[in-house]
Length: 475
Image (cartoon, rainbow, N blue to C red; front, side, top):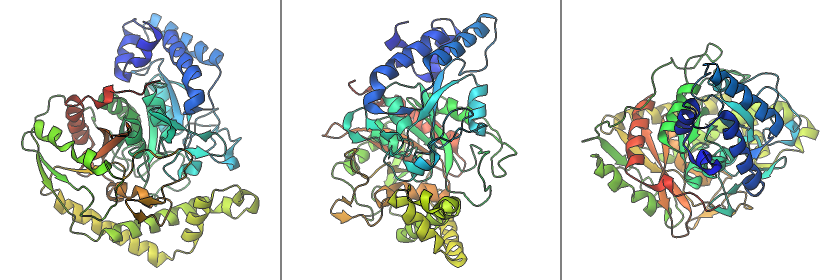
């Protein structure tokens, strides 16, 4: 196979090509490294890249194993780069922060253990915002990651490097994490698939606190829904090191499921509550006939809930968790001086939180979850845009205004992702097409609690009814 044929394959198709002998692991690694050498200097999606010599030696070992009849798993010999917020033994993990610029972990996160066990070769890391805060992937250690569809634009974040690497075919599949849309916003900005699993679906083994931090999840990104489902199946499943991890179950979506009569609520701008850049909401709404085509019934829904309460509760919990997790570095003046202003703002805000405020925020979060259960009595899925803006200038840290409304915080422009995050719901971020500016946008398909497989199934049907994922950047 030619190099561009190899890098053009989906991850599941690449697995088949490796296992049936159409492409050797060495050929696959060479094709990807050559493409990274050619395109990554301009995009800056992959960082801390390991040496070609080491990677080709590992690929040759994988070829020898296949020749002897042994396969480690579906990712055997497949290159992958891990998000630079996730620890990988022996590879620098900077968290996008100069405080950790030289940190080299001595153990793998459990998700990384599972990816290795499935046969993948870890080639490096993918770029992210400093400490993962903000949906714009720039930091003082590795610089700015740029959008393959327009190198002057952002890739989003915090899984921005992962999404850009997928879009540019620098990786066959990628991991990410999502607290405030970090698997969804970058998917929308880069025309790929992101999946925020249910809370607890993918365990984490290296957190210093295991019980209170229930906003963030780890999950997959890919060029197709099947790829995302395959990686999720590798990442997911109970691990005793994470006491809140969910039991292992079959997450492979059933193909050809009949969605006749499935009920979908279009939430849009939440009854005028959210501002949007002109063209984004209209483009996302234009996807609704696709769902009707596969048999779904669509209704408009304005939540009967005070959405400002959801936002205030979210920001309280986020600041409190940020302050709790980063206080040691903040208390060191030399380290605090190396933090970006948004991190300091979060920490100082969180340090002022009382236990009563945090508890009240958790109660309002619980009320939102209970309200959504009543919504799911009437609907099978909810649909929202995945971002409120198109990809913006890569030199802009965050949008200060949307649709004539001033954004009062560095993350207010991402509020559209909060409803699902606050309830811990499974969400597929799927392409919605391209605006008149030629830039991509996306939607969120939100499912019932722990209905990850059902969300993947409708996302798969949606993918097969559209061709947006076939429209790659002109590189």
